[in-house]
Image (cartoon, rainbow, N blue to C red):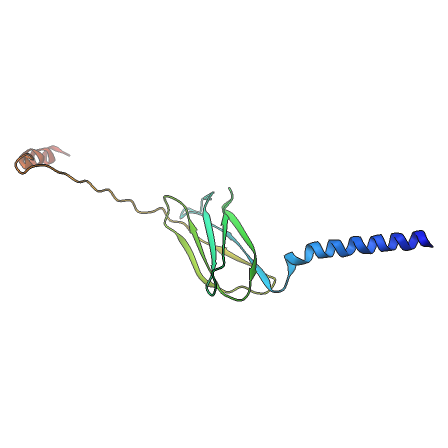
Length: 144
């Protein structure tokens, strides 16, 4: 009798410990965001820096997209909407604003990164009279 009571107590302690460890991930007062971030050709973009920020507080969470261009941010309080920004060098930012989360849910989003427009600036310095525009004009005329 004593042996079965001890086994029952151990089983109860184990179950309580298991439930206590899993409940925080499933609380009703938080939610999560899971998303994908491909480029404009729908190709995966790995290593994209993702920032999730609350519209009502200073809460900010960071994540990084994996090789399949996916990211997940968990345990977000439901007290605000969220702005999501995805950034990577060579691309313009992807943004979602004022995303409302639902209790215990995982919001699925997709951002798209577009290749950033490049610009080149050429600065020519010199003294007046050193640049011969007639040579430049003749060179332009010879081009096909």
